[in-house]
Image 1 (spheres, rainbow, N blue to C red):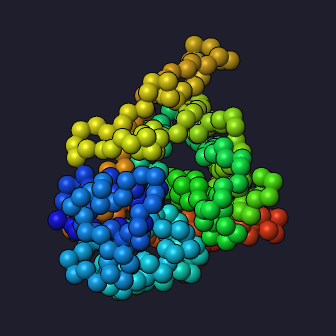
Image 2 (spheres, rainbow, N blue to C red):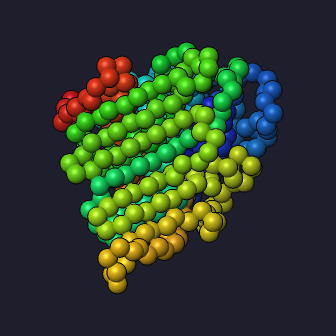
Image 3 (cartoon, rainbow, N blue to C red):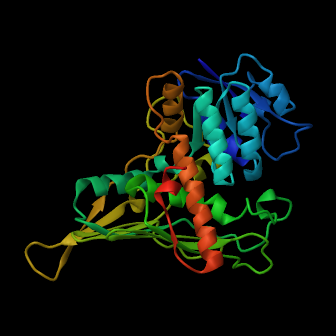
Length: 362
């Protein structure tokens, strides 16, 4: 049994981590850091998980000798310090995205984890979304031919500035580039590997915003162009994915249903299917009609099922030496380096090479 301690019981810890750790066979949600009197509008960790041990500090959590794994779900700029402390204490670590806020910090964590033979896993849960898993299925089918364009949008509609949240604080670790950017950058890097160039526009689009709240990023590959976009003032939806190849196109609208279901209070179970997308959210594959030269055929592509349980099951197996990490720490480092190059590109208004040294983290 992998005894797990959770640092952070806000949105991330409460919605994306605790429910999945608690239902993954072979894992136990053992302890949670919860500081001071609980005044949140949702139940406390002890109310939701009566068996867990509540501690009031990270130091107290790390002193617990029976913990094997620490899950970190805290503000971005605390990830490095907390992960470093947990690894130094001999614990395996899962870190919510982004792994850290600089590639130099990620380098240090990778070296420390390797020196202690510990698992360090960035929580890139969107690899296990229905839409991305469906995109993988379509690409694997070969029906798009040679892919030439890959577009992905991950948008929000939050035009107002939110008070009393670290996410709106004027810190380069905050903002949409380091919030949704890790998800958008991770997927093409996982699919296509190292790009040749990164070109980006990182902006403040909302009036009075102290954080970057919109970006457009282009990754250039030989024969393939990847466009990644995110905005906090997107009132009208764009396709989540739009792919064009020499054999056809694939378009998919809508986000994976797991997050809204979790926010609404639904919880996964130990086994059985977790959540399927409704048919109305299925994507469409458009290919050339072999009978005529200028017409197309359209067909609905049934979505794969998204399941964040798969992430934690893989972490469990990696800790037990039964599998390699699906998303190793070096992937998290490469994502951060990509976002650093995107910011540099935006500031210098030019395309920045993504070098072999960047990719291999030297």
